[in-house]
Image (cartoon, rainbow, N blue to C red; front, side, top):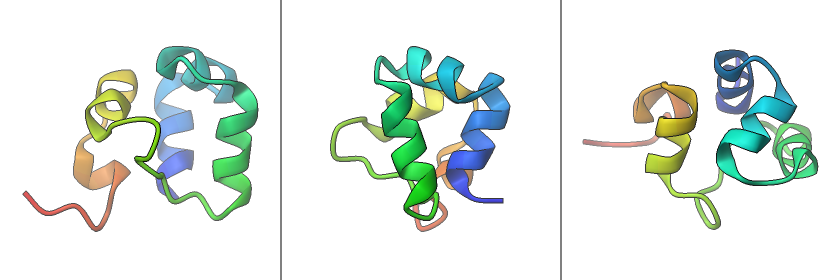
Length: 65
């Protein structure tokens, strides 16, 4: 399961995830379409963590504490 799929499942759907992050559902779809790796250019890792309740390690597999 990709990080974006984990985030979608944690929030109950693409639209709910988008709303929690303050972005469009289309952005979530684009991330999913491009392989599911979450980019932190426009949304910080802390925002992703807060919106999903998932750890940074789950959302960003390459993340090092």
